Length: 598
Image 1 (cartoon, helix red, strand yellow):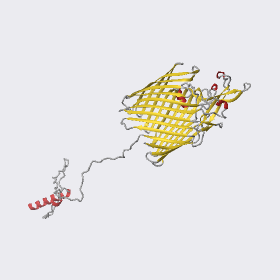
Image 2 (cartoon, rainbow, N blue to C red):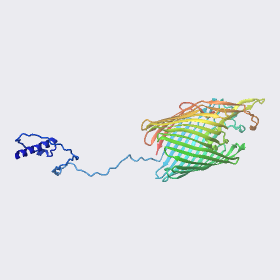
Image 3 (tube, rainbow, N blue to C red):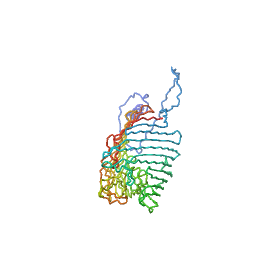
Image 4 (tube, rainbow, N blue to C red):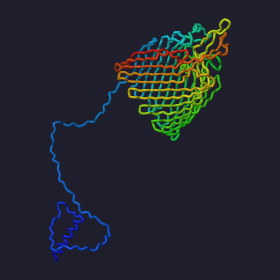
């Protein structure tokens, strides 16, 4: 009986373990036993008892497997030998010897010789020294609108020396230059030139066919901050002096000295430009004294401002003060605002700006002479004041290769100068008016003017070998007294293309367009016995000047690394337009030659 009970209990335990799957023995040690049942098994259900505690899984002891391994270290013999690696050296392009300069020589039609020399010595670590010389002249004739073929020679001679020295955070520049330009007063509007105007009669102050020269010697010294930091205070200056003279006897001394100061800060930065200008011209028609005399002016200019903001949005607020002293007039004081707001909603992609400022224009003698070389040599042009200029627009990038700018300006000018030609009529028998005789040097009159200007510019580099630049301006004028804005264009535009066809051949073209203009001839009436007895103006002639289109083409072919050929075609649209009334430019002309670098 005891034996049966023992066998029964062993079988019950074995069956219960198999039913819950809690066998923890290893797979290779599974228990295999045979059980002999002597008496039939009668199961009985025992009373269920509530489990009063959470189940706990008891972790069995884990045995870590062990591995036996070893490395059979036998030498492997190779047919090649291994060398130790050396540090790599990065080798770039061979250092290119920059050389010292360039010589260009050429000739063209209209009896045009050309020579130019550039010399630069940049071997010093912190200094650059250079020289530049140029000669270009022409000795041909030009056909006027009235049919006359007149001598229209010109010459351009320039010599320049410059020196730049770089300090740690600034650049000191020294520049000395001399120029000597010559030309003729060859123009005459309308009909053929009357023979009486070609006579050397000083009574009429006529310059038809007279030769003129402009000689200028100048000196400039400046200090600029090359690595201007957003946190460092900077101080710079600019000094400029020149002596200017003409063949007709006028002499000018001009000097200016300006200091600029920058004090960055957060949130406010301080800016100050302050300086002085001096001009003195002899043998001119002093408009205050109404006689040939000297004109002298001394200027004081101050431009204080503050700037607040950051790279995304910033505001500059300030103004400009001018004090002008003239021995022949009372001291003039002018003031204009200088405010500008910048907003960059997308950094380096688009910038929106708007502002208001003004400017007093110093119309000293040489400034007017270079602007219009055919003005009366005894001119004395008054300063004109741009009281307000309201402007706004945006600039930025269409893409990594395309920059653009669109801007609108509205300016209000007081005493804007305009150029015109004067004329008179010689008396005939019986003191009747004779034919109209035009003086071919320009006089000056003044008027208040408002100007609306729209500007658009696009610069696009299609590839590294092809680039495109387009710039255009449209103007709208409102005058107080004058009928037209004499000699000012409705629009102007410039197109520039450059293309490097091969490594040796590069070409470019430039197109200049000047819109329609109106010029004026003022008929002063009957000329009596002396210049002081001019009759009142009888009439004003408005002369339209057509749109001018100037096409130019350049090509350069590099024969060797140092030797190249060049050709330049100017005005190949064959349009002999008038830049100033009565003064047509040369028609199609070319210049070709060679250049050598050393």
